[in-house]
Amino acid sequence: MATPLESDRLEQEVFEFLRKGEEAVIDAGRKWAKAVGELAPLEVPAVRELVKGIFDFTEEALKTQREFAHRMLVEARGAVMAAVPMSKHTPRPASSAPKTARAHRAPATRTRRTTAA
Image (cartoon, rainbow, N blue to C red; front, side, top):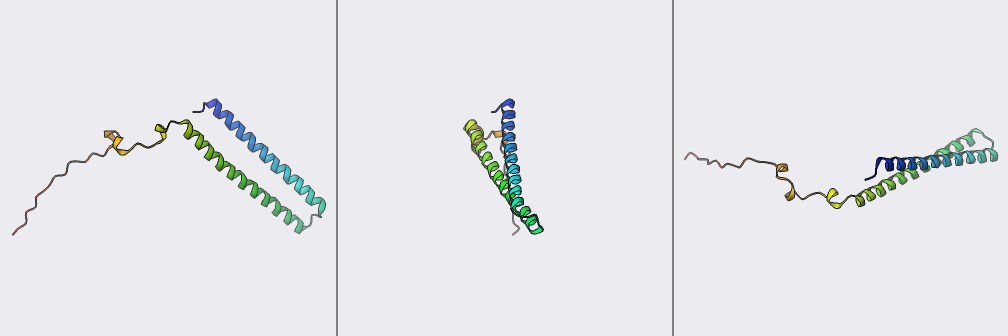
């Protein structure tokens, strides 16, 4: 199990990675907007296309980050499963459960019905 210090370090590395990724996306957006602005006058249709392009790009970047986060979770789960002994994360069969955990039922009593003849 990771110590609190190791967990803090890992969190800092992940946040630093995300921050650098966000900066790269913002920088690319600035460069793209500047290039588009130099190539075409900023008329209403051009502005609409610019906004559409920026949102399309941002949407794709977010999709990529979501996929990355899911892969991180899968990898982290795999690392945890590998680090924890099998006995701690495999369920016990019901037959080996402690007797106190089993349901207690009163013994069934048979009643004899007599029918009137």
